[in-house]
Image (cartoon, rainbow, N blue to C red; front, side, top):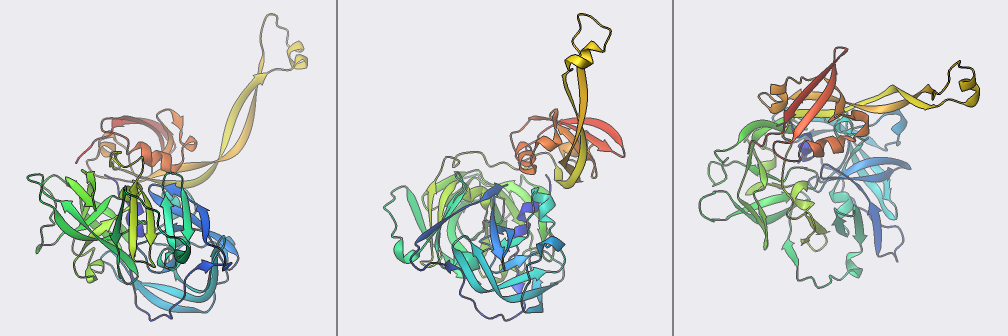
Length: 446
C-alpha cells in the first residue's frame, strides 16, 4: 500500500497567532442569489480557481481547514501579498512547528464571490509538493473563509459547486435526503455518525467525525485505549501521509459499516491513526476521526454553515466499491520532457517518381517534437506486489499496459491502481538509462 499523499490535506493545524477576524466571501452584487463554479475532481479532491489580488491560482476546497493557506508559489505566481507578518503553524505529525507568514487585507474572488480584507497563510517551505502528487499545479487550500456565508451544493458527478444566499434559498422537500446538525470547533465542521467496528454482532458505536473534503480516504479513526476504537486484527501498517509537522503513521483496514443518518455504507476502508500523529487533532474532546472524499463523493452534499447543518442525497456512486491503491507504488508527476515522435505518410508523386521501383507503395517518415508529461515512482512499500515484482523508487514510467505513460493523467494512473483485486498491471520503465519490463497483479490485503 502506498503512502496516501492526498491525505496530506487534513492539516488540522493550530495557528499560534491571534489574527483579526474577517468577514469571509460575499456575493459581489447584493441582488445575486447563487453562483455556479466548475471544479476538477482529482482522486476525490475538489480543485477550484481562486483569484488573489488579480492573479488566478488553483486551490483545493478543504472543509478540514479553517484558514486559507498557500504553500506553492513560483516566480510567475506573484500575487503581491499585503502586510506580511511571521507566524508559526503546527499540524498532524510528530515534528516541530513550522515557520510561515500571514498576509492581511487581500482581495480574493471566485467569479461573483468576493472577499475583501482576507488573511492568507503562506508556508515558506513546500512540505507537500502537491503539484507533482496530483499531476497539476496546486497553490494552496481554502475552506472555512469561502464556505462560512453560503449554502454550498457540491455535485461530485457533474463537478459543479453552487453557492446560494442562505436568506434566499429555502430547502426543497427531499424525502430521500438526510439532514444532520454540524458542530464547529475552531471553525471546522464535525458531525455525529455511527460505525460498526466488530464483524461479530451488529453493535454500532457513536463517533464524532470531521467533515473533511480535503482527505481522499473514506474514513480516518483515532485509536483510543479508553474507547472501543481499535484496529481490527486484519490490517497492515503504513505511512498514511505527511502533515505540517511530520509523517502520519497508522494502520489500514476495513470495518463492517458506516451509518450516516439512515444511510449505510458497507465495508468502508479505514485508516487508524496512532496517538502521536494525531495529538494536535485530539484537542477537540471526544473527536474520533474524519470522513473524507471517498465517502462524500457518493452523495450530493449541501454544506450549510450559516444554519449549522449538512444535507446528503445518494448519487449513482453510492454503492460503488471502496478500494485503495493495491500496487504499493507511490507515483508522482515528474515534469515534462521533449519527446521525438515518428509519423509515416504516403510519399508524394515527385518523391515516388525519383525511385527506380515499380509496383511499390512508398512512405516517408517524418519526426515531430512535443513536450509530454512524465511520471516517476517516488517510493515502493516493502513486501507489496510492486516491490515483489522488482520495481524501485526512481524508476521512470514509460508505459502502463502497453499505453505510453504520457497518454495518462496522474489521476488515470491512480484509478487504475485502485480498480480490482488480481488485475494484471504491466509496467515498462527506465532505470539508469536501461528499459525494463515488469508485471504484477493488484493485491487486496484487507
